[in-house]
Length: 223
Image (cartoon, rainbow, N blue to C red; front, side, top):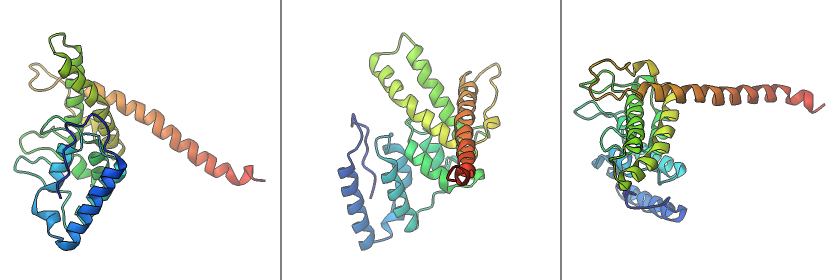
């Protein structure tokens, strides 16, 4: 039932492969529904997705797990939620499709949940911090080509995760302002998230407003 890792794949998982996986998972669940809760499958999916599975597949996979008893609000001993893990808190690899799905099923309190030892470490903070780290790697002349390629791959993943979090009510004010001495807090984290928040407001709100106007004018235009 565990989602296969896509770490060594250089491209997206094919739709045919996704369909075969879902078919196998559904047969397994029909045979034994407790498989959905026997292992921490959601945590594994957060580690293994890496942006290489489709949103439709991840949605179907998580629906299958949740419908058979998996709990999307669970946290580990450190207070890390699945959304923290999808944002990259454990391995530094984002899972944008997992984050998108979880954001649609969690309450604001869960979206803005802090970890046990850091009241500021929300999923949004984690994603912003990882995005900042990726930019730092690209700007560091001492980093090798492999590290820079990995950073380049991860940047759009974190940007997508940040967008999903912001659209679902993640609180930007929970990201602390940098103060000296700065410990494990990159100076641009808050700035990077705020920039993407502004972009989201300018695009999503504008698009939504125009859609509402067009819908309201549709009857008159048809006359």
